[in-house]
Length: 104
Image 1 (cartoon, helix red, strand yellow):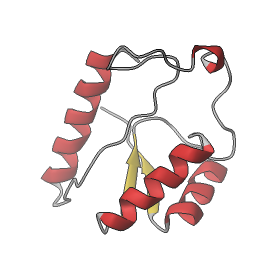
Image 2 (cartoon, rainbow, N blue to C red; image 1 turned 90 degrees about the vertical axis):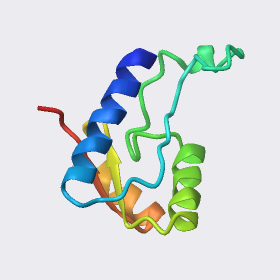
Image 3 (cartoon, one colour; image 1 turned 180 degrees about the horizontal axis):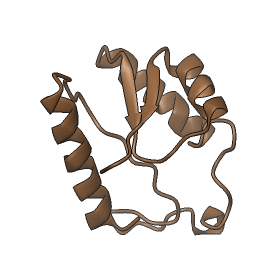
Image 4 (tube, rainbow, N blue to C red; image 1 turned 135 degrees about the vertical axis):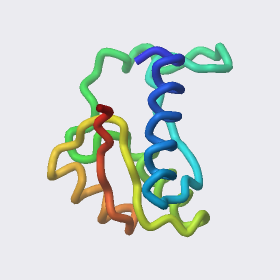
């Protein structure tokens, strides 16, 4: 997904969450092989499949758990479709309910 599409998707999801009474306390993007800061990314891993257990890499999953704890988040919304196993594993790691957002 291109940066503009990611930003548009995040804005759309945030708007819908707010419309149903939710509070968006943060956002996290996992980039593989690219960087908004133009630093060299992990291009060697760019073609690797996403982590089948959590979708995110292990480090990013634990980073997300730390952010969720700091922000007192109880629910996480992903813009990518997750499998039931990924949802359960991320919920276990983060202590939050996990959903994926599908735009209309």
